Length: 430
Image (tube, rainbow, N blue to C red; front, side, top):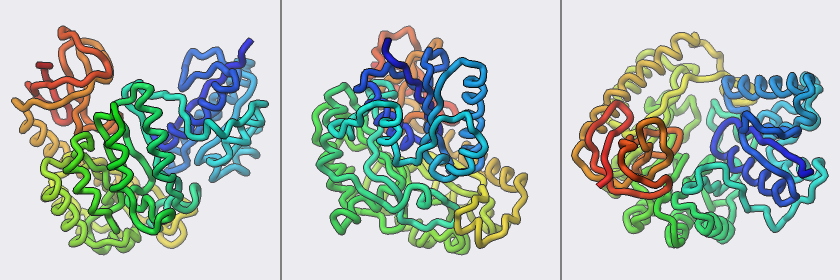
């Protein structure tokens, strides 16, 4: 009988890519693989963990404990843990959860494969067992991060920025397109730095241009750019290539000069505003997604009021807000006192999201009557659920189309927008 393994992925889309690479190796070794399956008959479970902030760490630990209990009850035989949490707290986890058969760091997939008595195949090192719907896939273009943001432990877990060569990424993307992938979600911890380590200059624009020439790729979306040293040559590519979406995910985190300095963001409010204006001027119709961090040590009510005014003025099309999490192994965790109570952090996050909710509702209402290209992701209840070029899976709004129409999942349609809510749209295919 074939051995069965179930891989559970926690955390971000970059972790998902790592799981897909591991699944590919196991499938090539004759394993029957499943991903995040609740009814899997697999007796072996591999958990890909997240160690970014407190909530993510707690989720990872609780998941490991759940499977440890399942092992004690005889429901599974083996547990393997890898990823960021295991990279960061391996020794502690070994001591605390002895039921786990092996803990591996983020970059020890090969050892885990070999410990499972399988042959790690170098020829498959960039091939993936896709866990997303077949019409879209993530493309991770680098590992690590060279930034020194005060609140972030990721560089200590992932190491320095390492770009994957352009030719390797183009080959990987071409293989994805041959499998039916139509939408590439380009991801990295820091898109802006791509290529500097390999080519001594930013190569993001060249990479995106070459990806856009791959037959079958209808959309390319870019996630997690950094505002400092932003590669402005990318903007001409976004204008020239019709399949590069007018969508950019760029984390800004704050606007106050004082807070940007405390956060070690290496930029200023004026530079940030100029960046936003230039992006919108050079790429008409651009939709910006960003995140803001509230409650960082040193943030006063005046800083928060400045941030609220900034969000109102900039009118971001997409915005997420996170309360600060005081983390060990970070500059802030070692140098600053976590002096702002959690309830104030959460209240600030809620207040900022209320402002954004109103902005998003107004922007969405302005789309009523327009015709937009939409990809259909799934059928859910009475609606086909899709996305525009301005929306990425999981994090952005969706377009709901009556299931009375005959549509195919994974196909693109011209959709007339007939209604809107705060974050979602309604439409009909034409």
